[in-house]
Length: 73
Image 1 (cartoon, rainbow, N blue to C red):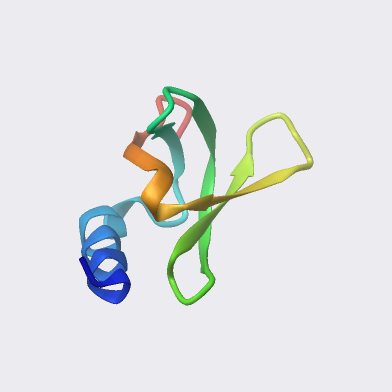
Image 2: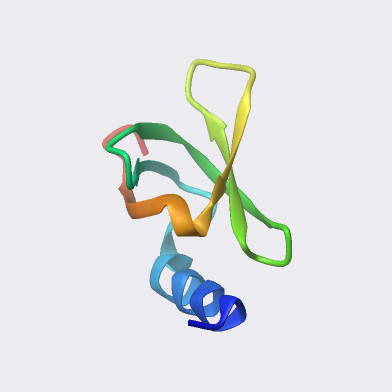
């Protein structure tokens, strides 16, 4: 599948979660919770400002199983 097409589909699916606190479940089962802030690397990754941490996570779209609104939002 074309990377641009895949990124476009991802952003259409999760557009309503932008600038909200989300729970991101990765393909390996790891979960991250934080503010969905921005897109990176020509929309191939997203930036999550992690909860209770000064750190951020740059997550490749290909590594994401699902993303949903956090109860903390």
